Image (cartoon, rainbow, N blue to C red; front, side, top):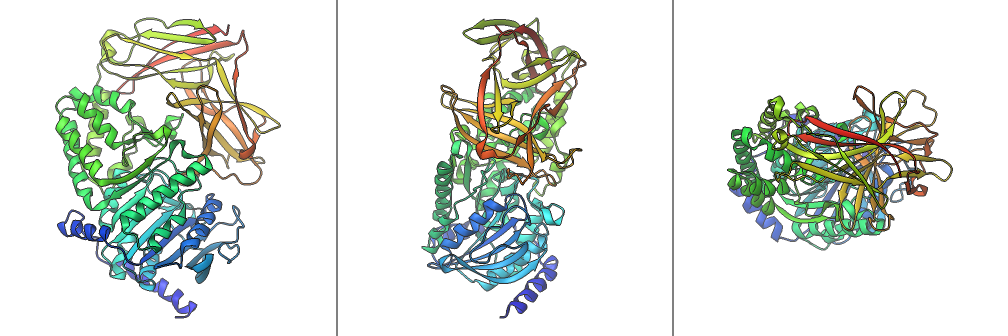
Length: 639
């Protein structure tokens, strides 16, 4: 078939897709039988890569194409890729085709080369019809025993994936992913993929896996934000060697981990291989737990709040408005089975279902124990997105969340978070120690505690440059305590130095992980129109203070999806602090200063002791499950 004819067939397939039948139910016994056979069988493979590279992740994704090209054409492996490139992020030559802007449909050939099938021009990769047509043509043009589809770009958990900058940042919601993949499979006459992969941030969630379950035997994705290098696509050599789907999935996980170790980004990685044929069991377990929690929420809400506060979360941010509010489902259920009276059976059912459905995982030092699936759980209604209730997954979890927030709003005033007295401050060996005592009437509702520290300002407010979770247990002592080492993070680009905010997100004997909020914007921008939220994830040795890892993650401006930050030319970075005025109103804003040129590889980080005599402010906070915050604060001079 000529290139012209192939291009016409791609468009024709797209025009028919919306008329195709909906996907089948994933709870069927036939699906489980097919899964077992697929997992056990070898045979030939076709890999379809949907590379949404019209974003700031383009440089990383061009490396991925080259990696996949090294495996393509060998053994019984065929590879087709839709690669939509941007205009300004990379001029890399890809598999001998040079640089281009827009979409190309490629067959990846042997020895790291590629053949252009179709020049698609300005293509919208956020259109489910584009995805569907690609799936159909890839399967029809490359018949095989097994099929894998990998979607690569920014990810955002349940809101979806992608964000095509050339198409007004259009991304694919979960409903659109299911529509596009399902229609593409139906047009090609294929019931299911063997493997569906998301090389993107935050996509290993209960919501994603349950929605995608009718479409594939297995899914592979990350609970946490993914470093820009993503997967090591040379792992697809396993498919060329006739691997079954489980062996291929484990090879991808092993390759990802090895590459992360090599790139020194392994401190907080996750990747999990999920058996989608068993997601019906997870659906049933989550539905049972949701119903039990909803029925007993008035009694269990304080316990749920404390459990949530101590459960591993992903996509964290110092600014709660930027946090993804994704928490580990298996850990959450496991803790509830111990702590929440009356729902142990339902919680244990979730733990067992997650253990059964997650076939393989990898984690890092800061994500130790991640079980492979996350679930959406904002701590308070202020940060709950009502669009969550519109997802094509309905197990009662959204109903429970709404009831939980209602219970929080109904805490009597006398039982809301409150301290019984002032904070107690002591100094020893360059460290300040703070403690406070709760009002006993409120103690049972407290879910978490934390400290903030900063500098008093001339208008009676505070410029806050750090926060840490504090030690709190509901043990009847009604006390909370913490300490602060009287240092400040400074970042330098080799010319200028700026003080940065530190949020301690993970604390162990071998690693501290800090989240550092920043703003990136064009140096010529006087209005903030180009401003982009960026979080530096900094891994630090707690004994030496040495920086062990540093990865910058950005929220894509048009979608809010996440990916590793790739600064363009002429970009300045500004650390963001939290400013509180005299009335107690807070706002996150860039600090004053010249900005740092975004040559990230040459940034240096130092923890600098505060000057003796510095006027300091330290605040101890307690939060109840309704989101009510009580605070006691003290000012002092640094000794």
